[in-house]
Image (cartoon, rainbow, N blue to C red; front, side):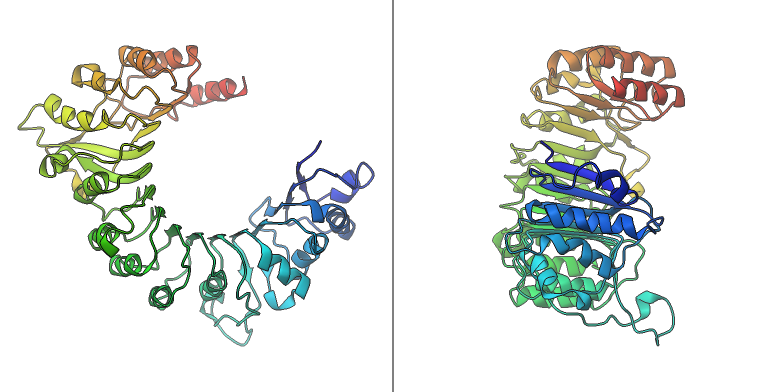
Length: 462
């Protein structure tokens, strides 16, 4: 009983047509293509296959095998031909590296997009552009295309699509969005976009939005703060590569009498160099429903200056750099225990990653990474018995030996994976630690040695 099928467009006709044309239980189809798609018979075979099975599909993906190949807009609408019947079940559509001209689609194709629940676009090029303009394509004014006002898309993912304003028009049409993901790299900043989005949110755009992932450079810290003030209560927020800083941190915590902080479950800010430990400590003390936190760094001094308890007792994933300040004056052990005492209260923690901070300015001469050692108080974390994944940054794993590995296996019986860094430990010691974990069924990864990388591949094949 085949429910999911992944096939390349090239040779699709010759390999499939003579074997099977109809799969009565097919629900998911993933089509891959490359720049070598020149055989019209192959493409017609794909369209024929979808025409026989399209109405059963709930999910369709059209993805590239290389960065060069693109399907033109008419080919995309032709592929959807089999999904245009009224009884079509298609609810999830992914299009990657294709050209789209929404003015070329017929009404049946438009209705497919209007009924979708999830739409994911990766490196989609909205065309055409006026050829009378000069300069690179992003400088040419986008053509206003046929709008999709009122479409039912609830989850929209847009990754490196152009043009920016055309993309935003599509977002505006999806008025029932619950989840929005917008990633953009290498395209110029649009100074109009932040004010336009803030104005639309004030006017009531996306009243049901709960999840927001904006990894682009369009918004300043001030504009992000304004955005948090006008958008509805968020449960999931990802701004890893953004200007998120002090102003947006305060707005996230205090806007609307804490409308975000009272609901927040996932907060990902791991690459925000402007975010300091003071605000991270506030997140841990003021977000009671937090389950996932990825942040830049936190020091024991931040905890001492704000000694309130961490209220996020449901936290399951924590990825952060723990730093110790004032090491030259005070002993390492009591400083480490300040952090370990807080970690010991997170009994639901399943994933713990000690990061390397992206903010080098936070590292003074008397500041160092917290190490994970038994004689530094590791035994305080025995309550974290549900731990499944542990990742140690180079400085955190200093003096991490087999005895620490033995303690972890004794007290964290559910551990499935451990990541060690490429440096720090002596080569033979690291081999002993890795072998110790692997002998007990734990997947151990170490990117440091090409010899051990080869061993890793053999281990993963078993």
